[in-house]
Image (cartoon, rainbow, N blue to C red; front, side, top):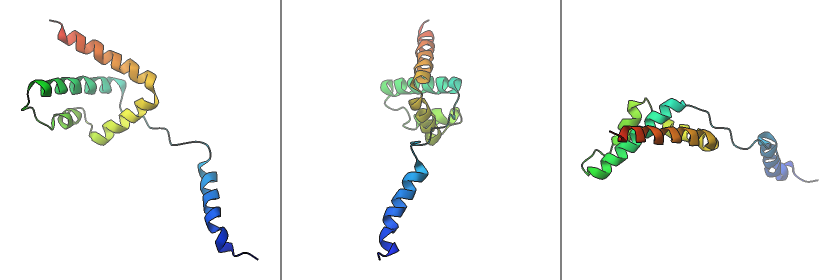
Length: 107
């Protein structure tokens, strides 16, 4: 008779596979509204442009922009993970960003 201990690793692997099923990784949760993301992306673009023009611009400018909108790096990355899972939504949001930046550029 075989020892039950020998079957333990196989049983653990099987239990793990059964418990996860075929659902894949958890769906990211939407944490930031489209309108907020538009404002954040606009400000990040403007901050990036400022850094290109002014080498003395604060290296913490990105974090300041996020804080201005009530976000931190983690919450921003979580928001972007949701949009990565929903690219059609991101394309719409980014189109708005481009349009608004173009409007600000015109005199």
